[in-house]
Length: 199
Image (cartoon, rainbow, N blue to C red; front, top):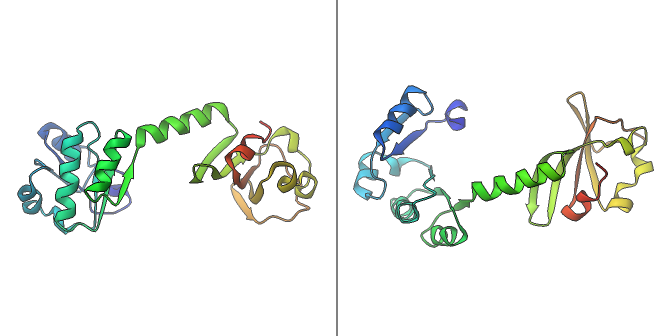
């Protein structure tokens, strides 16, 4: 739906005719077809092999997911993104050629846990399992202090990339900038160091 609303041509495929009709009625995609994605001839006839990117969002049916991914790669699709429901499922998808494997349930579970335990962290971009860039609300403890006073690198092992007030970001802010509670700051560092920031 997001890709469609961004103006991309999106073709939805499912074996369930009711779902296909619902997609068309709700205008979630440009086109939608009822077909069996484990049948390479059906994929070819539907024109799927002409697409640049295909997302295989079959999570709970491992066999169908793996066969569909294999069919798409053998059909010459340059970029196949596949949803995995487990680590072994992900390994199988990689083996048959998936270019990118996503674990949405696991990723959302991790994100929810972080949100519940660190409510001040608004956005997180994980660089790897140990390091992130985060957007965090300036805590009350930092209110009225300058960036130089805080010395985030020495005290917390973090580098300040930007501050934001009223929706305007200042990249690489001056050390004499005096922070205010409720502003946002963007920092980079290890997750352990980020977790040491006051709430």
